Each structure stands twice: as C-alpha cells, then as structure tokens.
Image (cartoon, rainbow, N blue to C red):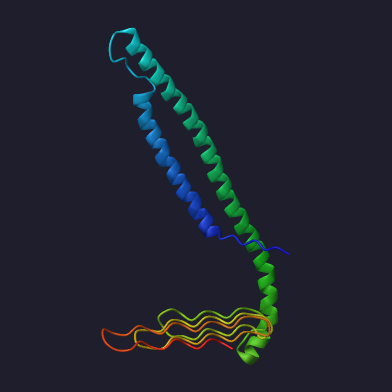
Length: 189
C-alpha cells in the first residue's frame, strides 16, 4: 500500500512564487522587446541594414519563443494551483467522516482515562518545558516534549500506545550568560 502526502499550503505558496517569477520575466521580456525587435541600422549602407535586420529577426524569434514559454508557464501554474485545491478538497472530504468516527470511539475512553484509544499525542510547546501528551492506548505516537526555557529542563516525551513510537524529550534550556543550561527531557515510554 502506498501513501501520498501533499502539503497543500506549500504547493499553493510555490504556485504563487512561480506566478511572481512569471510576472517578472514578462516585464523583462517586454522591456527587451522595445530595443531588440526593430533595430535601426547604424549607417545608411547595405551591411548595416543587413546586420540590423538579422538582429531584429533574432529579437522577434526570441519574443515568439518567450510568448510560448509564458503560455506554458501559465498552464503549469494553473495546474499546480488546481492540484493543490484538489488535494485540499480530498483531504477535507476524507477527514470529516473519519474524525467523527474517531470522536465517537475516543470520547468515552478519554473521559475515563484522560487519553484516547486511537490518536497521536500533542507536542509540548517550545520554550515551555511542557511534556508531550501520550498517544492513544491502542494506536498512537507520543508527543515530543517542549524545549525548556532558559536554564530549565525540557519537557518529557509522551508515552506511546500499544502500536506507536514514544515522543522524544525536549531540549534543555540554554544557560544565562554564565552557568549551566537545563537538562533535556526524558523520552516517553
């Protein structure tokens, strides 16, 4: 079985960056078009006229290729944006029914034990030394401990479920100007 993971926000940001690059290239091509597609001959002789015609022809060919590249670029940006929207829609459609089923299963167990049956534990907040939350009893990874504030210990990693990985302990806080920093947190069990 294969899994596909798509970070739709990153794909959307990449599409926006590509669109900005395309706009910059279009502006540069428009600026270059003025001086390269209709060159004037340097003198009144035939050689100057032939050289100007040759360079003008090259400039016109460049502009034609540039127009094709612009069209391809716009299609690529549109495809990338559409792909991000499609992944986002699919993830939202798939997550909604599954989340409601997990809520029904985990609700009573969480009320009794303070821990879900299925699910990953939350990570401790950075800079607080907060412990990572435990994963679900049956299936779930423990959350990583938060890094410690200055001079304090890092948070402990959350415990794993029957099937899962325990969370890593958080890094100890750094020392003030002089002294020892805090110890790192203990990994979960």
